[in-house]
Image (cartoon, rainbow, N blue to C red; front, side):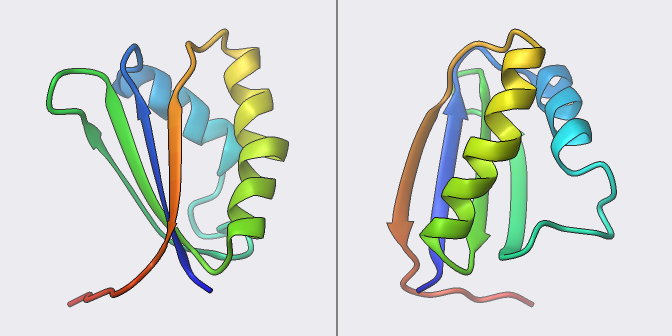
Length: 93
């Protein structure tokens, strides 16, 4: 079942996001298995937000556990919130 992952770091910014994504997905032409879509943008009240669509919660969780968290720790990044829900619908042009 596809899922939507929402991540928000109130103390994150574009530079920290970019440093992290450069470590976890060094080649944007070679995406992690199960990743369908990835979007990142400034948060409404500051901070940084990321929205991903994954083929499954297991693939999302493994990516966060094995790649994102080690990279964030290496960068001494502040914590971020994660919410995961089953994807109901998707429309892409």
